[in-house]
Amino acid sequence: MNQQSLMLRETYSKMRDDQLLQLAECELEQLTPEAQQALQAELNARKSGCAQRARAGSSPSAASGTEEQLQTLVGQARTMACPSCKRREEPLNAFKLERVTSILVRVIHTRAIMVGCPTCIEARAKSWNFTTYMLGWWHFPLGIAATIAALATNSPALGARKRKAPTSEFLLYVQIHQQAIASALAEAEPVAPSFSPERADQPPTAPEAFRTHGVRIE
Image (cartoon, rainbow, N blue to C red; front, side, top):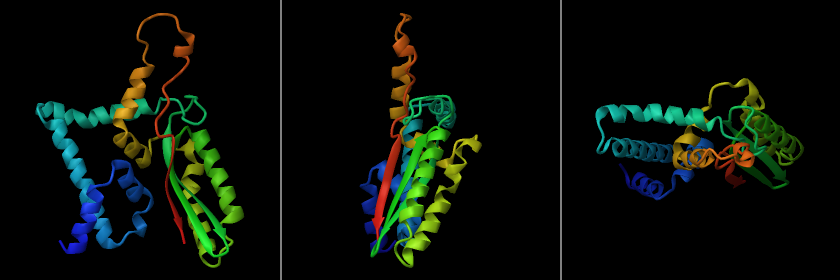
């Protein structure tokens, strides 16, 4: 491993999980091959460390159940209330979104992962597409290319209601925010069988509803 790779690995080791998610999900294609390798190595190391901690002091059967517990949490997380509309009529999911605005000499990229119900995700994708349609192409030639790329990124989100299974973005979201999701689910459970319609009608809300991962200006 050369000096540059070592420096990159040291940099990534100091980053939080959500910052690594930003790179892996939204900016991976912009990294150099050396940076991509260093990022992958750090992600693998953290994944291995989590598995070792899960196995520490436990039996092999308990360790093998870790993946099942995660899948169970994914299913529970999808029943939580949408962070945007506060309803739980549809299972939650997550999609990448991108918006582009151009101002003559500058092209501004805004990338995000939105967690919410399919209706809210589609509405946000349409809103970002409209902004991109109107303001994304005012720089030549980068604005036009960036506009096309952003519309392509948002295309899956426009069909969010057709996607029944959780996306890879939602699986990563749950994996990174396991404790926050588990806490939200626990707080929503009734503590006593007393009558409390406000409590009963208030489902848990998913954390980290809409996360803007990065803004890049060219």
